[in-house]
Length: 314
Ligand SMILES: Cc1ncc(COP(=O)(O)O)c(C=O)c1O
Image 1: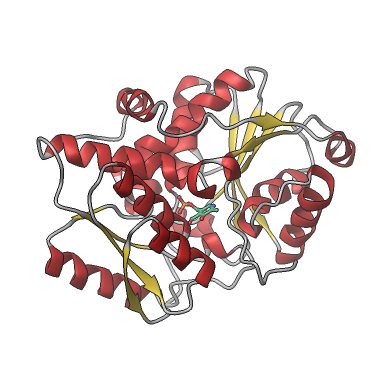
Image 2: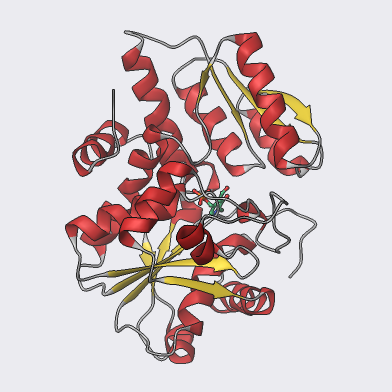
């Protein structure tokens, strides 16, 4: 049984090498001036399928295939967009079928991308409860293996490749800023960096409605399952249990909450100054850096996705 560990993260990185991009790190003089420090943007919006999600998805599928001796029968998941696209792409690379439960209001662009990668889509209502139910039913019906969007060992180990690249590309880094949704990416970064370079602080940045810190400390959650934020990739309220455990160990003290206005301003800065057309969720990390009073000298800001809905204007 594969576990979440630095050793497995290193193996995952080798396993997916050549299948995903080593994404570039860029700087922008104008943003350096505004932030008053040297900002290193890790461009995972330029990753295959337009987000970091491909890293974990392809690792998870390759691990499942190995576990089954050759190929698994198929993979199934639920997703508001980016994970579904990434898993559909990963399954296509390995020539296995993929089925994704999507919300009925998932943007057409994202549904078209999944269909383009030959995934079968099944439709649920618009709440997390409804989509999870549809996913469970579909999984039972098709007998496919599950690759959940964040609470998945293979996915988390695969995402850590982003952290490994950062440590090589920006050895002078003293902080990393990463957005949190279900927590797959942020927990992978927190654990990998926490173990390999404990001198680097990993800041987990959330829309303020999420309230991750009280959840980690007290375990209490409101009775709704999503939050209302412009950052549509991270509307899920709760983090996965695997991710929660990692956050409690590495990141309890480094959570930053940002307002919707702060996310909007950071997004406008990225669009106008760096000319990178990222999606709103990718601006959350920069909003976190801009909010921090005592700025690190060499912060790395992860731009996590570039799948912008065509109808969206900030
Ligand atoms: C662009 C983007 N960034 C960040 C996240 C959050 O990832 P996680 O659920 O691993 O925290 C998502 C999730 O879908 C996403 O699409």
